[in-house]
Image (cartoon, rainbow, N blue to C red; front, side):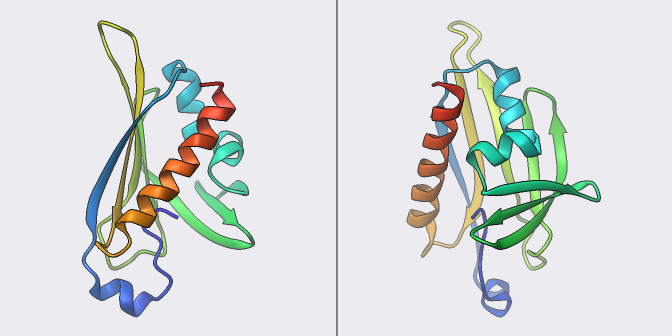
Length: 139
C-alpha cells in the first residue's frame, strides 16, 4: 500500500516522488473524516483489518501487517500517517478533505509517495481503494 516497498535495501536507494490524487466524494467532511481516522472506518475500505496498537494503527492486508503512526491531524480536515517501517524516506500518506465554499462539494486529496516505476500501480491502487470508500459512504 502507500509507500510500500518490500526490500529495505532497495527502498533505501530508490528516490520517491510525491503523488497527489483528488477525488470528489459525496459525503459530509465529518462522516468522511471518520472513515479516514478511525480503526473501524479504515477497516471498511482501506485494509482487511485495522486495530490500534500503542497509539498507532496496525493495518493488515492478506495477513501482512504494517504499522503506522499519526503524525499530524486536524479534525474534519486532514490526517497524516507515517509507516514505521519506512526509515529511509521522509514520506507519509495523507488524507485531506477540501470543501468548496460556494458549492459545498467535498473532495478528498490523497498524498502519497512512489518511485517513478511504481507510480502507475500506486495510482491504480488508490483509485480502487477510493472506489471502495465511495461505496461505503454511499457516494
